[in-house]
Length: 100
Image 1 (spheres, rainbow, N blue to C red):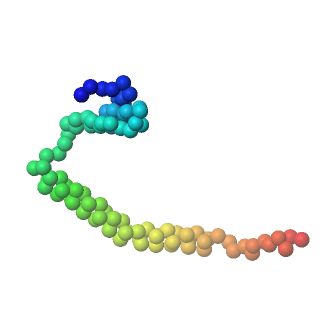
Image 2: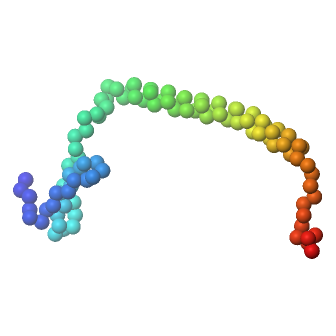
Image 3: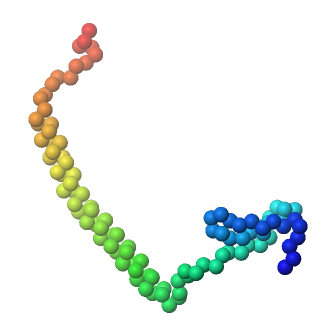
């Protein structure tokens, strides 16, 4: 196809697509995406879906495990803070009113 003088070809820096812009219209006239060599085949769809399902299941199991041990960790932190509070001496707080 013959290119007009008012058309400008621009390459996208992100995806390397080629855009043809008509300067008079101020619009994109055509768009060509680059060839992608790593397209998954339709035959691999079942395998890909199974891998994603197992990945989601593993992430869920990890989340459940973290939630189960979270209570233990919080209890340990509470006990440690309580032990530290018992060791500190009890001091009457000073108020600004008492300083006068």
